Image (tube, rainbow, N blue to C red; front, side):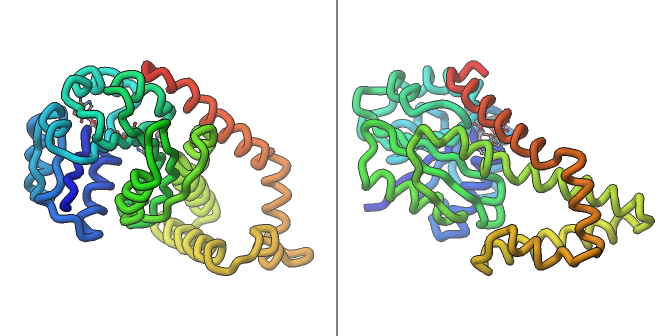
Length: 269
Ligand SMILES: NC(=O)C1=CN([C@@H]2O[C@H](COP(=O)(O)OP(=O)(O)OC[C@H]3O[C@@H](n4cnc5c(N)ncnc54)[C@H](OP(=O)(O)O)[C@@H]3O)[C@@H](O)[C@H]2O)C=CC1
Ligand SMILES: O=C(O)[C@@H]1CCC=N1
């Protein structure tokens, strides 16, 4: 049977997922989208050939609803949806922080809910999507969720108690790497390189390091040791990173992101 999937609140993450689903072979005819602004709805229709509908219509027509509004907008969206979502609909939340119980409390009894934390590399089919089942979600619902998010990258099932940590690591993770690239490009400027060249050198170093981390099977410490020659250049840089507490700063930063995810649990932000 053909499944219809609706993306509700198609912003950055919703569009990344939608475009990936189409690249993965989903037919635009089987996809519905909702947007808050009519011009955004038309943009999605033109760009992807999908049908924009109201939230209520999506709830009635789609077999699976993927909710990708901001956590602060989720309560309002659920108020709008609740009267229209039959209990057999699979509801997937892509929002940070909000637990599956929040949806279960506001939708028809026994509604299957799955929580997913993905990330923006979905745009290049390199997402990390971390998946947890709510109380009424079955193995089949989890497989269906993996089928959708597997089209845009890797998936991993975790207990819901680990979702806030996963959000701090992989959900927000790309931003930390962009921040590091930005900072190291500035360092290149300080060292006298043109900005474009500094950017290219750091981005290629990042890509090379990422591929080795993924494909070599080696521990990051081993990979770093292979770069760090006795009395060489790298150890001087590492000493400065340690002197400036970069490791401690990263641990504190991810803890702060985890704590913020917990705070978003109420949907009020
Ligand atoms: N950005 C990221 O890297 C990640 C985000 N997330 C999660 O994904 C969710 C979306 O984030 P992001 O894509 O960045 O945010 P966006 O603001 O880009 O997308 C949310 C979209 O929902 C629309 N919207 C809000 N309320 C409604 C409504 N009632 N009906 C229809 N559309 C509505 C907004 O409309 P309008 O354009 O008018 O504001 C907006 O386009 C969040 O819950 C976030 O926690 C998860 C992982 C990574
Ligand atoms: O910053 C945020 O709240 C969202 C969730 C994870 C990444 N971006």
